[in-house]
Image (cartoon, rainbow, N blue to C red; front, top):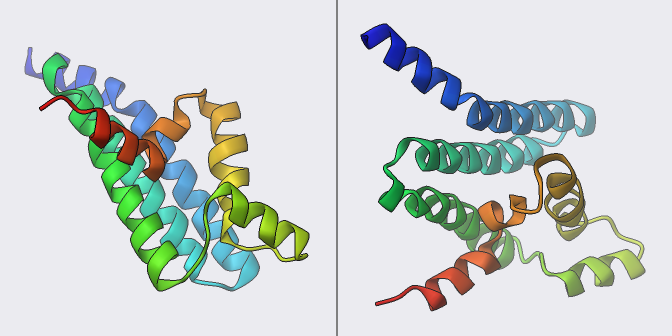
Length: 146
């Protein structure tokens, strides 16, 4: 019986591991290709946060499942708003994307939109942004019943 439970748990955690590994592969490839360690931290951190959140969502009881999503949003939100937004002074919003695009620059917001808004939903469905979007985190906190 114990072996069946372990097999069941591992089978259910396949998707979060696929997400985590995918992001880490992208991180390593971009780090090596661009010779910029930022890609390793950026994609590695985000992939780990999303994989952890989805894994918790799968493993937690029904009533606590939203906490997995909240954890992923919180971890990604702190990184994007705190580190990228405030410390690195990157505008990760849509207006930042168009500002950099029209200025002929390829900045963080362009990577953000390609990965999070275009490729993520194509590969993983429309719910992808709701797992990794800091603005969705803010909206969820505002709507949360007291």
